[in-house]
Structure formats: structure tokens, C-alpha cells
Length: 63
Figure (spheres, helix red, strand yellow):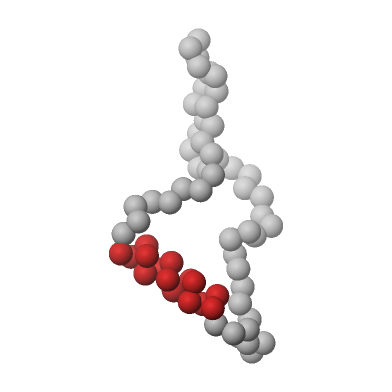
């Protein structure tokens, strides 16, 4: 799930910086690294799951 916060001037400026970077020609002396799809495993919860109750099942945070 994508979670994009408030789209304000700072967000747009950062997005434009990233897009400008990808428009630059490839330079073997300055390799471009992308960390958005790192092969890592998240092994703990950001927040503790909420327990089951009579009216709802156990609830987990997507993070």
C-alpha cells in the first residue's frame, strides 16, 4: 500500500529532484543506487497488534 502524506511544496520539490536525477545520463563514475526495493525482511512490528475481542478480530498495522 502506498502512503503519501500531504502533498505540499516540499514534497513536490523533492519529487522533482528525484525525477531530475533519473533524467541524467548514466555515468559509470557516479553509479545510481535505488533503495526503494531493498531485499530486507522486517521482523518486528512498528506498533503492537491489537488483541481480538468479541466484536473484532486481531488487528495488525500494515507497517
